[in-house]
Amino acid sequence: MTKHARRDALTSVSITLVAALLSVTGAGCVKRQQTPDERMLRAVEQESSSGVVAIATTMADSPTHITLCSGAVVAPNLVLTARHCVSRAVTATPSCDARGRSHNGDHLAEDVDPSAIAIYTGAHVRPDMDLPVARAVRTLHPTGQVLCDADVAFLVLDRPIPNAAILSMRLHGPVETGDVVVPVGFGGGTSNVVGLKVARQKSTVLATGPSANAATGAVLGPREFEVDRATCRGDSGGPAIDAMTGEIVGIVSRGGSCSANGNHVYTRVDAYKRLAQAAFAAADREPNVAARDLPADESR
View 1 (cartoon, rainbow, N blue to C red):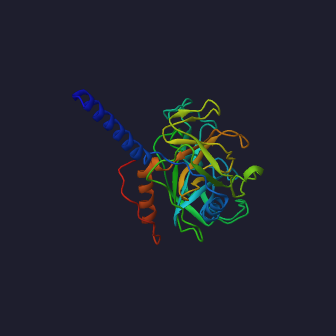
View 2 (view 1 turned 90 degrees about the horizontal axis):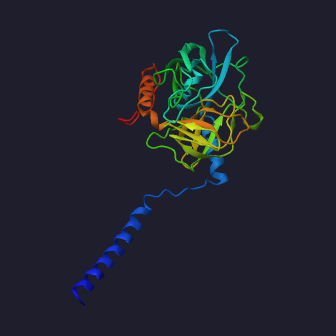
View 3 (view 1 turned 135 degrees about the horizontal axis):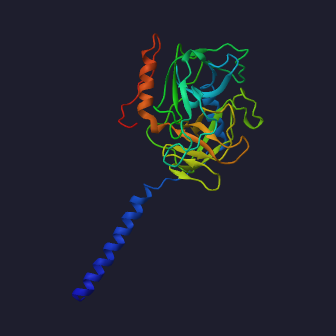
């Protein structure tokens, strides 16, 4: 074999080995999408149901002006929800771009007095008739008056919520396109009976931000994602629960009509690790209530 022939043969072997190594190492980097079966979906719904509560906020302009949202119990006296459920709205139609900036000015004014925020449990909640199981003593949320990319809040309560499941948040990594989630909230499902707790049909994550979906009209900031199934009035602040792990990956922020497919936008919880850490610490400082430990993280 000539010198050139030996060199060409070695080069061919090297290319083959590199290709083989890349196929092996690359296989570990590709996420294999999994579809949960019906049994798994039902289990997620049942296990999470008691951890989803109704949040009734009485607005300062009138004692009869009450908004009903949903939230998730993440510690005995700590509820995760949406920012627009605990602050007074300036506009009902926030407009955002893919950088998480507002197209129509401030969306929020001052926070509602925490004492005007009450927590209810049960399958069908009527704030005008039912007694609350707890009240808020403090709200924590991102700074600023814009909901784009920041529609998340925590409520520290005056007491633990009895018989509520404590739901875990996925703080270690983001949701991905193609993931299957189960939204749970008090929007009443397809009947849209506000106050009726329903786990919606499984939803697929259509897109993650920053992006704009021309097909559905959704514009997503860097900390947002879109699902295909409708969420309705009363579902605001309710969790999207990963159907494979049972973890909360996002909360309802805004969207299209109750019957529309797509353009239902959630805020990612993993994007607010520091806020979650501050909320757990605040809940832990409330008398006679133990909150779980939160792993240290330098991320937001």
